[in-house]
Image 1: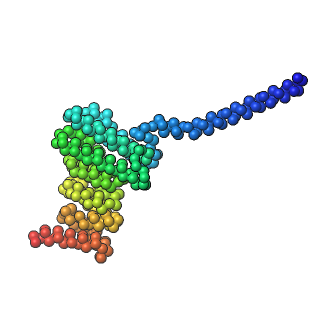
Image 2 (image 1 turned 135 degrees about the vertical axis):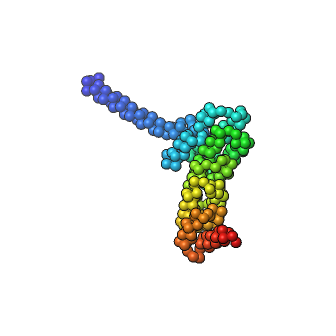
Image 3 (image 1 turned 60 degrees about the horizontal axis):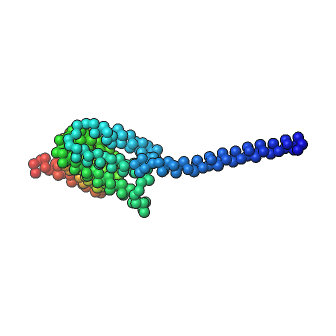
Length: 284
């Protein structure tokens, strides 16, 4: 074989090697790009799913870790009975699981309709809030750490974006000693919610704070809802206002009434409430 033929063969072999290496590299890269998400999904169980990086999810996870669901911290405290602590532990773990499923939208729940997945999570959370309320009542309010935990859970779920869950959080709140922090969360939820059912229950719960330092904040919140809330929530607030009327807030609600359309139901309700309060305080 001549020198020129030998050099040509070397060039051909080198070119083929480089081309083959390039093709193999791209094949491996493509394989990794396809298999990586699959590997991540198989490595993650239902209780350890990646959550979407939304501000709501981040805030919820921060609350989850800092305020409510750090089970290890809870269990380092004084224990009232092994049975009770097992119940608390199980309930908290299930709340954790359901919240992760809510964030990931990738758990093994019915997804036959767009709503069925979240209905399943809602029902699960409502049941766990009922269970926790039963635990508190069964212990006859004797465990301060349990009461603190229940208060934190209440505040957390008052901010949950489902009004049926919020209503159950109000039921848990009602089983606990009154707390200004819980009252503030109730008022914040009332500003967010457009559910008449939630507002009806919330208006009854804030009656517990009628004589507390939260009363001015309550008056301001209810006045604002009647002024600018949805037709449903404004009407509910106006309908349920009477037990919250005092001599101190009569001027505020008179002002609100005078800002409303004269033929509106809200106007008529406030007028009737204020006239009745005036009549009762005149002694007949």
